Length: 299
Image (tube, rainbow, N blue to C red; front, side, top):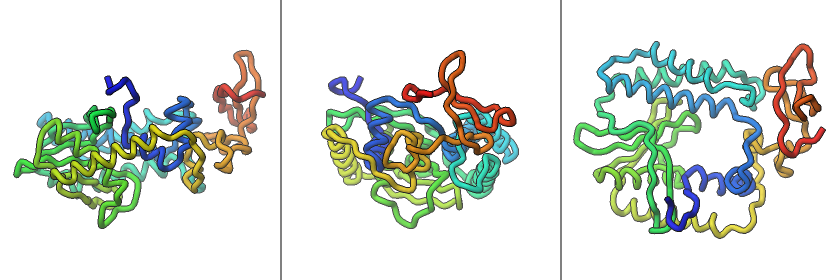
């Protein structure tokens, strides 16, 4: 139970508000489901699941090879696919992203996993903490490892984004939130870092008393900003193309466009069937893709 019975916040929730208040309102206040998932999110989910499998196998005394890791990724990737998954960027395909996921994991296994001498403390563990004595805060930590010298290492794996030479303040706040949770659960000393799977690089820092205090103050300030908000205007950027609410939002540039078929790329047409309204591909009968219409869709 969170203090005062209020909502639990997370880094994802706070960053969504900063990126686009309208998207925040759709997701967290109105509970509107997104119209689609991006293939990038499928890749990220499958890669993280495969990395968890890798360390679970090692912790069980096995020696998991790269072929097993890739096979696990493929299994997870296929399980995540569905009619609501969308390839946004022109010229790319689902199989392009599958190949990229395999490459990320092959590089990780070769360049980092084989030489890894840390022991696993937790994998994809959920935490719930209280910030400022008032706000519930939750999240998942990809991996907490113990270094040979006893330092706890909080690791977040990045499948997207360019590797950096220094921590961006907003991204650092994500790591610091995880550091706070690890500190309360296990104590110190603690190091927090991102591992960029794109090139195998990592960036991080020690997480001491001063960093912890500043992180908690910043997170509380960010939460207060959200709690006190009374309007949620759209904040359009090029990322609108990847937003599952783009067809609902008048500022996205997509609201007046017909949705496209994830199978063939043709336009979807709103139709009425025996079970109610649904979206069907204009290429029928060559393409038989359909999906249920939403509450606001009227043919």
